[in-house]
Image (cartoon, rainbow, N blue to C red; front, side):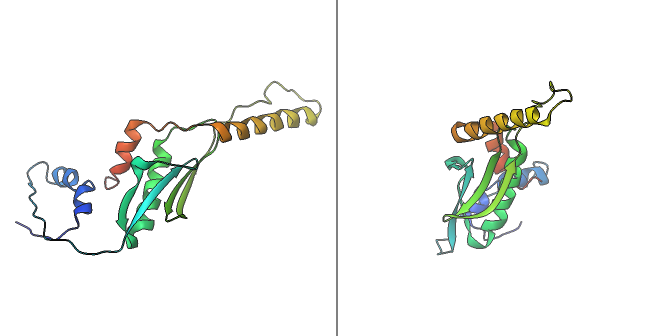
Length: 158
């Protein structure tokens, strides 16, 4: 039997699932609230394409905020499917970006039908594509699948 004093946030943050998987289901977990203490906690927000995703926001200790933000951004980069435009995934702490990842855009080869000849035609097609992608970035919505939310919150299972 082991006795520890843990912050309740750490218990909620995937502790029970990890305990069961490590012990192959044999361990049990019981807890009592020991009391309340004042700590240096901050709200870590996640921005996807410049928009805040409230479901991924969490309250963490200030010393672990940068690590958790960087870890969550890296995990989201692998979970969010690629779009036709570049997506920025950022961890924000009080208006300051502490971690960022970028999901590159899918690219269509618009110059495939141009064989040889003048380079200006190819440049014209690439410029037209660039303008279209800028317009998509301005109006585009990023759909985050439900499985990405669940997998992103299981950060201990690397």
